[in-house]
Image (cartoon, rainbow over all chains, first blue to last red; front, side, top):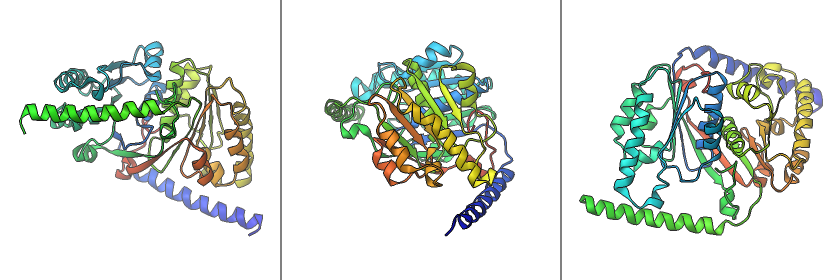
Length: 202
Length: 202
């Protein structure tokens, strides 16, 4: 195949792709907030949620972030939001990962106290984006009532978008979500003996 | 199973998980920058990279961001970085998606001009994190020379981390990466006729 052929084939392929993309844009005519579920066992779920926070802040949107089961150590995104984004409503459960606490009843109380901060955000049209980071574990361990959580998400203001992260999460959450991405762990540096790294892993 | 039984089983499971997690942390003793590849067809790859930017900025790290094949329209994360993070070195190819340009030779020139901005970052130990957003397409279309790109990444300063996003990317990039996450599109709001949304999709 000579260069001209290659260029012609490339242009034909691009033209076809453009037609398909344009048709998709034409067909999508509903405007409302969405529920995005970022699940799976790979790296990148919480960081993706924080990337969406940055995206929303770029438009001056109002953002709420609730983190369930975060460790005691502050992460980079938490430091950043606390130092540079005082207008982002940011709350952490802050009891450490559950496999450090060894205390089911204490975890349940902490989860419910944290949910009590999330629920009013999901009822407040002033929030454009609400991030419920690692919420799925609260549902999986039955620390929170799934029906109550899903109803609050489903009944949120129509313009509000919600991002939920964490492995699992259950069939009902998955069905409620408009967008579901499953982040698959193909390889992790950790498995090759590389230490978790500031600014990359936390 | 009564409540006490449940609590005992839960605590035993958590204890086992804690042992496993602690053993993993113990074994990981190499400290160096990592190459993270975020690939697959699902939503969340670029936003995950920008979440890592936020994470790195939380520690005051120096960050460079190079975006390949971004559209003409500014996205939220671009607006945010331009307005609030003048210390982040941020460059865009800015020729529009290739299926809009219909111009292979123009695209190649643009890709190479953009790569000329990325390459010095990959040689500069002052950068803690370099994001090469949507680089994979440049390799897949042969707009850039894969060997040249992979050598630049492989020979970067040992403390520097690099994040590459985009579908595909090829076997060699995948093998070079320390961490590979594949973001699988389980469902996308777009397919249900919901318009792409500011602060969520761009």
